[in-house]
Image: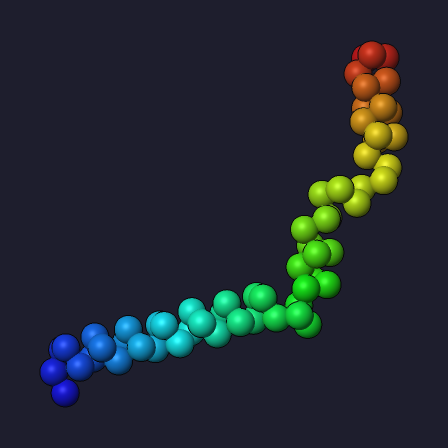
Length: 61
């Protein structure tokens, strides 16, 4: 086995892994998990209350 055969096999292996990751990422079974993760920054309902209390603490100091 020479270096060119090894390079060809590694290219095919990397391509198979890439296609597998794409299929996993775009599968319908993972859509809900990814949607939940994408909305995490917006799910903090009490951020306004925490920000307000921090602002009041700074004013009192």
